[in-house]
Each structure stands twice: as C-alpha cells, then as structure tokens.
Length: 117
Image 1 (cartoon, rainbow, N blue to C red):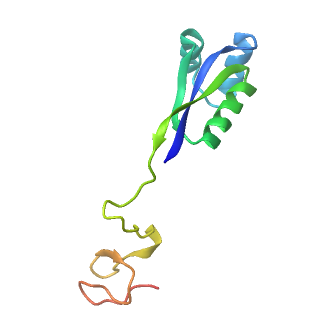
Image 2: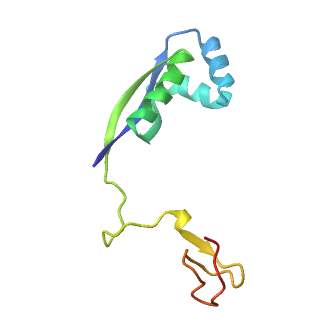
Image 3: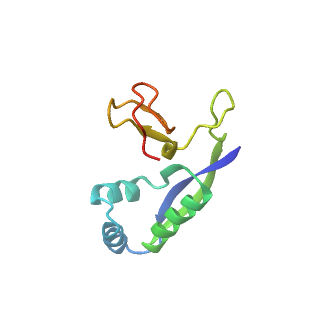
C-alpha cells in the first residue's frame, strides 16, 4: 500500500497583497486565494503522492503561504480483480476497416483486415 498526502494552507508569512499577486501569477483565481486566506487552516489539495504534495507545498510557500503536508491515508496499488495484468494502451489497435478495438495482433478478429504493427 502506498501513502497519500494532503496539503493544508495554514496562513500567510507575507503581506496578503503580495501573496495574492504571486498566487495570481501562478494562475490561481483571486476568489480562491481570498477563500484560502479567510478560511485558514484549510485543505488545499488531497490524495497526492509525497512528491506531488511537496511540489505543491513548495509553490505555495514560494508565494508566501505557510503550509503543512499531512499523511491522508493509504491506497492499494491498482490491480485487475483477477490479478491479471492490464495491457497498456499501446497494445490495442482499431481496425481500419470495421473499427473494432482489440489487442494488436496480425489480423482483425472480426473482419480479417491486417492491423498495423
């Protein structure tokens, strides 16, 4: 099982106007920034890997926010119910003649048309 994390906004370490401007430069709408500042502490993002949580937290800290990364739970690795591996998307092909989507093999299972390798 893999741990998942959330990023919690705890407040400001710079003037609010500077924080708003920096967050705006990152594409965060002003109403979202206002809600964060008004509602602190507030969860900003959840269900992240530790790497993604750190990257997100660093961006907000760079804008002048104080954040915390908290373990949020655990998720199991995705597996097919039968325990079989699910083929990657590149293993599938669409027949150019009949449009049937299928595992890439030499010929279409429906019409026999050759499939691209």
